[in-house]
Image 1 (cartoon, rainbow, N blue to C red):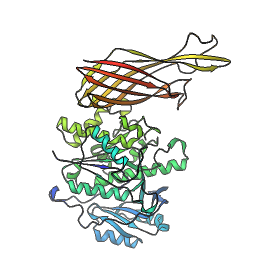
Image 2: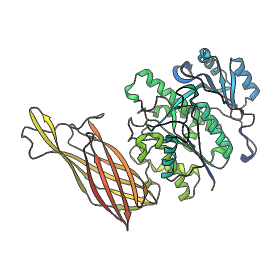
Image 3: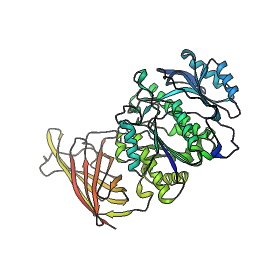
Image 4: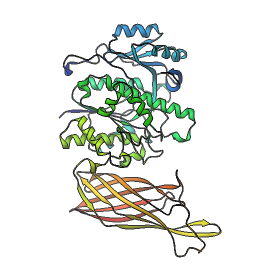
Length: 516
């Protein structure tokens, strides 16, 4: 089965509209008929202020550029007249999907946008939104750079194969634009790929989005920046979803897009609810899109804990951000397609269903595919003794971890499920006046994505444990990272488990798990 898999190293906002149904066969449709492409340099970025659908907003965009999607009955001549009469000049267009990029006087952009929104023939009018790479990895530029290579490696390690990588980065001729991308370039890439592949299977991964600059913690910034971040993310998603909605139905039938949620610790569930209220968007989210976050990066990924179209992916590389979690999810989708002999949309549904019963909808190999089970008995790991002050006393404690791992594995892919009980105890040589404060016991379950081969595999995980004595994060506790690595031979897993606490101390133990 021939597939076209596209890894978009950068991604940005796109908009909604509806288009006339095309009557001819899908393979004969040319979406780029009478289309033009903007090949000039992008202008500087700026904050655009305007009234958007009744709400005053500010959002970062490219100066003097606006994007429009027209209703399906509007032809190119009518759209051109509307844009020209508003004071705009068309610099890019794809009339078949109603998309136009126009250049306007920067000082008048807000007023022009407000006026265009009043025109019933226009489905959406918005600035050309700026987006940011959603990863902590080092980015130079373009698909041949480290980030693009990292995205491809993660995708391949999770079972995917791809045909090409498309750039939507801006060039470096206008200052520090090498880490930015535009909504308009993203729109053209999606349309171009859809037109090239038509009714064949098309898998796309988008590794960036709009909103706050990557790794800016939403919970620590001002209310104004929080609002700008949410509007930027909303406009990005609006653009992506509406672009997909505008494609012919036969093109969408075999199209799946995984999208990184971003790394700014920002709630997005309310944004997704708002998006679903728009025409056709709920169906696109359900049938064509998977939004991927993670809870082991820092700041943690943007979150929507109960949203049906958002999953948590904690693969090894997701420590560096959601843009390295999303391609693993796409690799899973492609693996499910191959092993279960199903189409892209059906594989997407199976992946979403597999995450339903897991904490925060975490996505695991063991829920998707039949796998061999390896298990072992309970093990006790001890850290300490640690000193702490209690009044005039110097006190000592030990930390115990009680673990019982179960590993699921097949063909270089797997999951480690490990319930953990945590307990702090005063040691025998502690002064009799010492007391433990705060939480002394807690429990959690690690669910770790494993990858590699029988001769060498590895996975990482992180969970929050409550404690009164460890460095606190959030609600009086600490994150405890875990690394598990090893090999498989003759039905036996020989592994090494390492648990760490935030002061840098760690405990390592060897584990043998037997095939069940």
